[in-house]
Amino acid sequence: MSNAVLYGQALAHLRLRARLSQDQAAKAVGTSQPTWGRYESGDSLAFYERLSVRRKVLDGLGFTEQQLEAEVALLSHDGAFPGGDAPKTSEGVSETGGEIKASVAQWITPNSRFMRIPTDDMAPYVYAGEVVLYDVARLPRRHGGVVIKMRGGAAFTRRFVRQGSGFVEVLRYEACDIDGQPAYVEIIEKLAAQDVEGLYPILLRSAQTENE
Image (tube, rainbow, N blue to C red):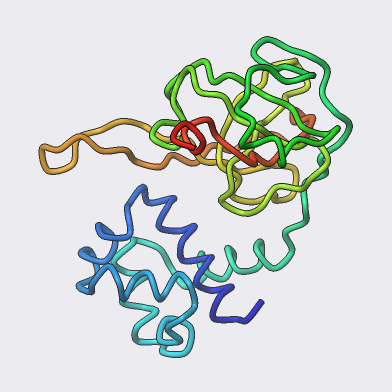
């Protein structure tokens, strides 16, 4: 991973901590959303290479250079969270699967599991009543959807952000109004790693196949 990409990912995490969309963050620092997007992707080197740009962006978000470097350090040492053994059956989780269209049969392996979503706390990514297909043998990818199995038996969906020392950070969504229009904001949750049995990447959501 290049340094520009690494700093871009750190910037994205600071923006999420500030609970801002890319468009809102761009407006706060006086630039455009496409430009901001290039900062986060690392396609633009300005944020990484130009101190004046970096300071302007950080000031707009309300963070310091030291906080940015701390994020970079964490990202540099992120490790993959182990998937662990397949979880025991718990409420809402099927060990053998359920009704699924033939068009997704190619995704099914002995490690496949299905979960019906009980709540809307991950809308619009996935809604209550939909079904997700996940894999208990694969490792989660940054910002990808995951089924989280807690040691207490609970299972729910989130989007994976990163693993730190003794914790796992994930995203959920919260409905809100922005400029009088219904919208969703991303909320970071920090889970104690000792309470997490496994993170299992979501491969398909029922909304992705309903028209196939």
